Length: 308
Image 1 (cartoon, helix red, strand yellow):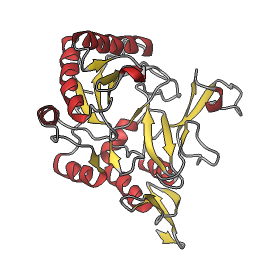
Image 2 (cartoon, helix red, strand yellow):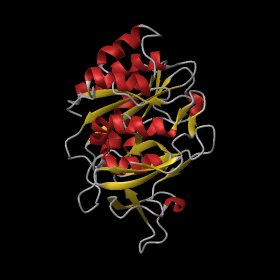
Image 3 (spheres, one colour):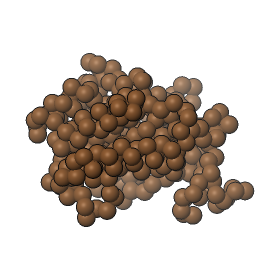
């Protein structure tokens, strides 16, 4: 590693990366610097990369820290190193996100984060949040059928994480009745994500329909606490079961990704025992900060259910 002012050149798995602005504060509330963010991602790479591998990555970048403007980025940016794996994927998204320079204007050239060098390169671009689809790409870059189903539990105030935990137990039971085992992850924001492994038989439309069925059945059973309706006016005091993130064009924050919130919270795999505690005690579960996540990994490894 050779320092050059507030810049270093570092060797990562045989790749030389230019890392800049290490002392830039990205989270002013906690004085967390870009260097600390890079260290966090390097430290969790062993458990994070399996959740990113073979998946197209959408990033949210905060070049001036979380107090500044952010932007979504899907396409691999100009200057992407030649060694970064990419996948050119057809899209039905907005024209603003399309790769207009390619021969096919209805595609996006996503980076695929399979290794620590690519992860470090992305984070150096202030990509605090890493979002992925529920499907993987083949070696040729073509999307496969989804390998997992996700339901995002999003509380409408005054409901919070306590209510999400109560509803999560009902979602778990509903999925179990359909032969699916799910694993809980805090969103790092307000709620929870539940992931269930899928056999590669359902396409994205079929997976979305299944998730919507689960959400609507639970809404019918408990309309006072649960809504499957996207209309925000119908969410206050309820937990919205967002089934739409199973769409082929939608993404979900990756487990172990930081969030661009006031504090450096993390989408954190947890145990069902922790969810049950959170359902009983309004103070029984909180969103985890990155320091806590590092301690959890050191003590327990990856708590994400290996069947998912």
